[in-house]
Length: 290
Image 1 (cartoon, rainbow, N blue to C red):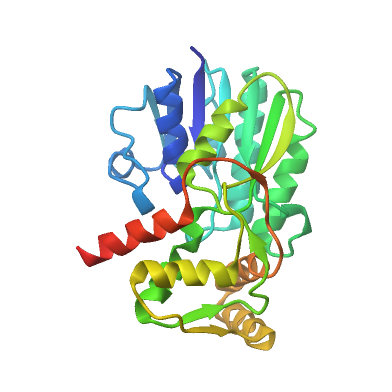
Image 2: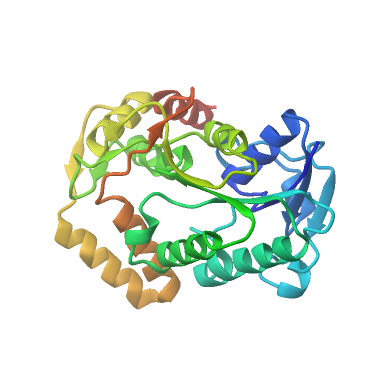
């Protein structure tokens, strides 16, 4: 079976990707900063990588000297590499680190490179989305077989709704009727591994259910056992919050722009998977109650 290099292996999705690859019999080379952290349980129920990894590549993925040779002897790459809440530059990680990984894969003549992007990245203004779109464009010109998977959003991204539900007050974005189809990490991992191969392509994918943000708010409140109390945040307030975040620094400002963009446009991909958001919220509520 092929050896697959997995970058971003300790993230929410990356852990599920490693788990799915190992379950199907692939040999996994996990690119991580800390093996100790990787072998601990991940966020939002993502699995530990203990016993799933055939080979560890431990080091800073933003260092080109470390990345050089990380693909030696492997067959394919899956990159779930990217930053959202971490303290790092999106350009350094989402673009440059992925670029150096692609260059190494090309030097080593691997068979394919699969990249997990974001739905609508090409229309984004935040540095996070521009960095992702820039790398996807470079990958599209690669001599390797390349696959780009564009998820509509992760269940983990919506866990803030569960946190708000516990307070009894749900704040909704300025356009609460915006439609999204978030997907569980395990389902997205299965979708990605299904598309590993020697044919190039691009896919927009979401979970099995489509929601408005108002419906997501109601689901979270119901899971928390709280009465329906929802307030729509005016667009001017959201814009002001982005402005305030930008005054705190480039990183907070860009993160605020990234989330604001995601809250103001439809993001619905091809329906896929078996996990439902209501069950995810119920699980989060159960953990909190313990």
